[in-house]
Image 1 (cartoon, rainbow, N blue to C red):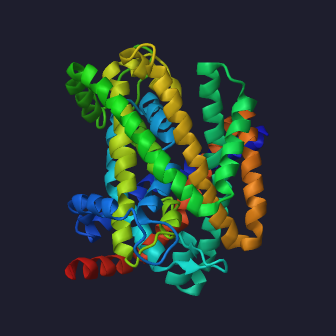
Image 2: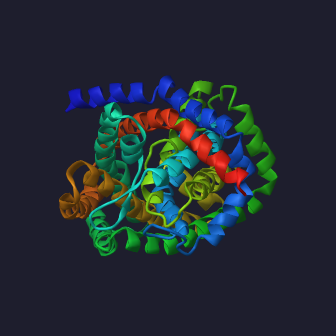
Length: 445
C-alpha cells in the first residue's frame, strides 16, 4: 500500500506541477485574449441572461438557469470552505490572490467549454441531450483524436467517486460528528437515502433540486460572511494588504502558521481554485449540454458565471473572513480553520454556519457529480450501465462517510488533473470555433 501511495504521490506532483498550472492558466489567458476579454466586458449581460433563462428557451432537457445551478451544485462544495482554508494554511494570504487570477481567466475557459458542449452535443436513445468534452472531442476533432475523449470519460467516471462522492460524504460526516456528535455511519446512511431520492429522477430532478437549494444556501452563506466582514471592517485594509503583498513575497512564520514561499502561494492558490471552480476540468460542460437553448454563445455566457460566483464571490468571502479574523495564524487547517474564523466573529453560531453550509454544499456536490460521472459511464459503456452506476454511487456515500480518505484525497486530486489534460488540449484545438461563434453572435446583436 505504501508503494502505491508513493507512486500516486509522485504522479500527483507531476500532474499538479508547474507545467499543469501554467497549462491551465495559459489556456485560460489564451482564450480570454482570443475573446477580446469578452467574459469580463459582458459580465452584466451574462447576469441579465441568467435572470431571463429560468424557463426553457429551445431544444434541451432543463432550463439554462437550472443548468448553471446543476453546475454550481457540483462546484460549490468543500473547496469553498475547506479548500480555501487549506490554500491559505499552506500558501499564506497570497494564495487568495492567485485563486482570483485563476477564476478570472477561468471564466473564459468555462465559457469556451459550454459553447462547445452545446455546439457538439448529441441526443441519446432516450431523447436526452448529452455532451461534454468527450463529445466535442468526438464530434469536433478528427477521428484520430477519439482516444482523448475516451481518456476524459474514464478519468471523469473514476474521479467522481472520489472528489464528487466519498470525499464530500466524509467531510460532511466529520463536521456533523464534531458539531453534533452524530455517528459517521448515521450521517452517511441519511445522505445516501436523500441522494437516492433525487438521483433516481435523473437530470430533471437533480436540476430542480439544485435550482432551489443552491441559490438559497449560497445566499445564506454569503450573507453570514458579509455580516462578519462588516464586524471586522477595521481589519479589511490589512487583510487586502496581506493578500496582495504575499502573492509576490514570502510570508514569514507567525503564531501557528509555518510560513510559505511565493511558489506555495501560487501553487496552492491555483490548485485549490481549480479544485473549487473546476474551470478547465471539463466537468461543468456536461451539465450545460443539457440546457434548453438554441444558442451555444448564450449558454456560454451563463456558464462562465459559475466560476465568478464560485470563486470571486463565495471563496472570497471564506478567505477574507479567515484572513481578517487572524485565524489563519492559529495553526488550524481545512474546515476547522474556516469554522474557527466564523466562530471568532460570531461566537456560539459561527461554527454552526460553517457546519450547515459545508453539509448542504457537499450534498449538492454529490448530486451534481453523479450526473457528470453518469454521462462519462454512459459514453464508455452505453445506457444499460446507468442503473448499475447509480446503485454503486449511492452505496459509495456511506462507505465514504466512514472511511479514512487520506489516500482517496490524493487519488481524486490526481484524477482531476488527468481529466483536465484532454479537455485543455481540445479547447486549444477547437478555440477557432469558439472565437467564430462568439464573433458572429455579437455582430448580429
